[in-house]
Structures are given as C-alpha cells and as structure tokens.
Image (cartoon, rainbow, N blue to C red):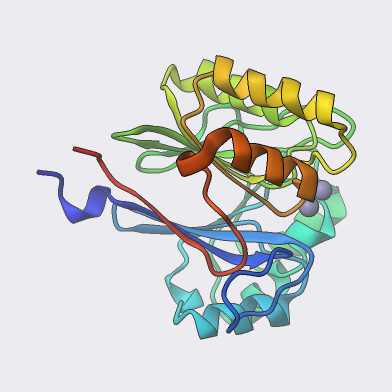
Length: 244
Ligand SMILES: [Zn+2]
Ligand SMILES: [Zn+2]
C-alpha cells in the first residue's frame, strides 16, 4: 500500500492548448508539480496576470510554491515569474548558468537564485537534467516515481529525444511519462514518425505533449500511443501513482 504522499500530481496552469474552460489559454507553458508534500512550479508562462488568474481559478495558493524551475530563457516560460515574486512570495529560482547576468541580478534582488548542475536534486525525488546545450540551452525536470521517470519539458529546443536520453543516462530509470512541449511544429510526418520510433526504443510508456508540440505531432502521438496518450492543455491534472 503506497502512502498518499508518493502520489505525483502535475497541474498544467498555463498552456496555449485549451482544456479547462474556466482558465485562460495563452502561448506559453507552466506546470505545478506536487510530490511527497513538496510543491514546485516548472516555468511560469508568458504573462503574470494570466498565470495568477489561472492559479486562483484552480484554487492554487502561490504562497505554497516552494521553488520555481525555469526551463529556458524564453519569455513564454519566464514571463510570469516577476508577477509571482511581486506577489510577496519569494520561492528560490533554479535557472540555467547561461541565463543573462542582468536577469540573474534582477532576480537576485528579489529572491535566491541558483544555477543548476546536471542531475542536481531540487527536492526529494525531483531532479534536473541540468543545462543541455545547443542554440537555445534548456533543462528538463525529472520526477522519480514508483512507475518510473516522469520527464517534464518546456520547449525541448535541444531535441525531445536528446532530453529523454539524458534523463535516462542520469537516473537509469525506465521512462514512464514525457510531458510538456516537444517542439515539433516544423517537423514533417517522416521526421515525427522517427521521433515516435525513438520514444518506443527508449521505452517511453506514456506521453502528454502540449505547448509547442504542434498539431500534427500531437495527432500522431495520439494515434500511436492510444490509451497511453494524455490529452493535455491548460488545467489538465495528471496524477501518477503506483499501478497494481
Ligand atoms: Zn522556447
Ligand atoms: Zn515555449
């Protein structure tokens, strides 16, 4: 019997894919991660007002957020942070070493800022891939559950397959779920098929693509994964617990 605290809950609080009609849909991504009594926010969407309004509609108290992790330096992922910090709650912020110094200094005047390292533990059972390099460097958040690894990505600019490979290397865990932006909007059918084949090769059991994944890729993942595809948009709650 697993205790309640080992249940992982991920709530999409900001996304450009509509889901919960009570919430505003806007370009960007933010996910609230609750695990073992800890609450983290991964990315902050593009607009602080929308982020805070969506949280209010979902009855999420921003004061309960214990840490914020920023996937990469794009405004559709970082744009809501200042409004969150201006609200008087000052959770520590985990960002990439490559973020601009001026931005780090600006945040540093408001809260504690940490540059992540590969495999760094952010909270109990939650770690980061660390900065994955490329034209647009990025980190993904990894949650180790009884079912396997849950990989949460922002835009996946370094490549979604590369991120999943890095996650496996760092943990040696089987991959249960990959969630977030896969960044395949400019890929054709053949390219997306190859990526889906890579997901199968890597043993990814479930997928929850949203944000910048692209309509065609979302449809193809839905076809391939069937019951193991999770339709995801703003307000989606994904619960991961041990399966009997
Ligand atoms: Zn981006
Ligand atoms: Zn994005």
